[in-house]
Amino acid sequence: MTATATEINSLVEKIVALAGDMTPAELAQCKLLLGVAAGGLAPRGQAPVDPERAAALKTIIRSLAKLQPTGIAWHGKPDFISDGTLTSLRSEALARRRDAEQVDRYLLSGGRSCANELIASPSFKTFLKQNLAEMEPTGQATYIYYEGLGAGLDPHLDADAFSVNLILVLEHLFAGSPSNLIIYNSDGQAERFLIAPGEAVVLYAGSTIHAREDLNQGESVTLLTIGLKSQ
Image (cartoon, rainbow, N blue to C red; front, side):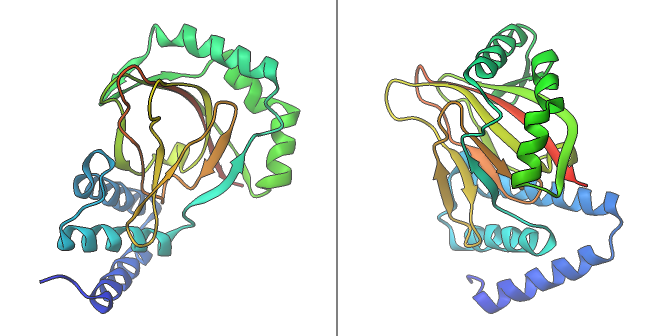
């Protein structure tokens, strides 16, 4: 039997009430479990067709929305990224690719001098002050590489160091249809966003179920992600 809207709302309220009695560490674990569950309900970013699984995903997403802000906080071409800065970040990402670690269906490498200098730059601080005044960097930055057919990332939530995540697209190469960033709305439906190189999105990634759509043959995406947190 498919859950009704009333039943979903009732379950959401119970989850939120339970979370209200949790310690910060317990809440982080709860969110982690919810994110893992979402990945199982929507493997490879495909919204579930089965009504029961769709209702379960909707329950998870609505519960998270009650616990913390969700969705996109900012999207556009950041004025703190000049052509020269973008070139430097691309060069560092290429150098760091040699030591990147395979994680599931993508590669990951820590940011180094160029990324760290960007985080500490006056222009980045000005950007935060003007657009995200309540945010400050966590000091964590990573390069992420999606390469070739089948690369991607299942629906998930980010760790606390990237609970608010600035995702800057450094390069996106493709011959046919490009893959997208997927964000799940409050109805559990996948919304797709194509972010161009040099553009960025700031996502409430620790409370918004999101994914990277599977890449096509010959496609590659290189990202810089910068963790943010509330002051």
